[in-house]
Amino acid sequence: MSDPSEHGDPASATGARGLPGAGLVKGLAVTLKTMTSRSTTQQYPDVAPDLPPRSRGVIALSEENCTVCMLCARECPDWCIYIDSHKEEVAVPGAARPRQRNVLDKFDIDFSLCMYCGICIEVCPFDALYWSPEFEYAEYDIKDLLHDKDHLGQWMATVPPPQAHDPNGEPAKEETAAARKAAAARPAPPSVRSDADQDPAS
Image 1 (cartoon, one colour):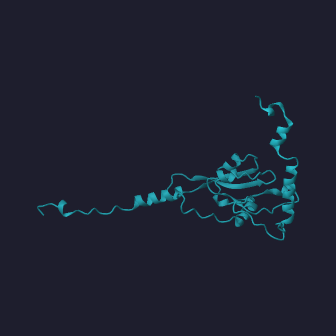
Image 2: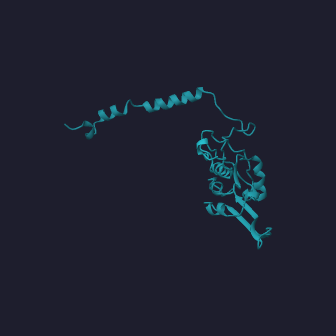
Image 3: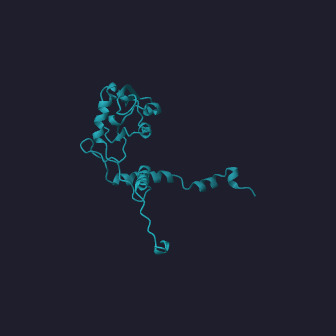
């Protein structure tokens, strides 16, 4: 015998779907439940919102950590980071010739283009960029959303301290390397000879 549902039997199709209007009743039940519960509206800006600890507000720059490696500008998918620098000679005592180092002249981020992906912060190898939870930096003119290095440096005061490491987690690579180096530098304990190892003639 063939299945009646294959022939489009309306009675079997209605039984599979349930009673007509059941979806409407469920929707009205959700509406009534919401109407009888108290709202949780926060009176912003009079009451500051409780932000999650890893909120992405604005990007802060620690200028002294920047080595002008250009990784952040190259990896930015929106090309909203503009960096300019020059080279200076540094005299190193005992060196045959002076060395050169990059000096940061310009570090601008255009927040009208930024999509807050955080790639620039992740790829920075010298911890020069940080997330700040501050988000109240709206401007009347879109040109004012271009923050220079001085403006980005002011956001460093709002960067929260890093979260404590999990005591049950794996130690950081730097801690492991430092412990290994300290163990290698520690002198070996003197060997203790037993009476059996001593010379019988003595």
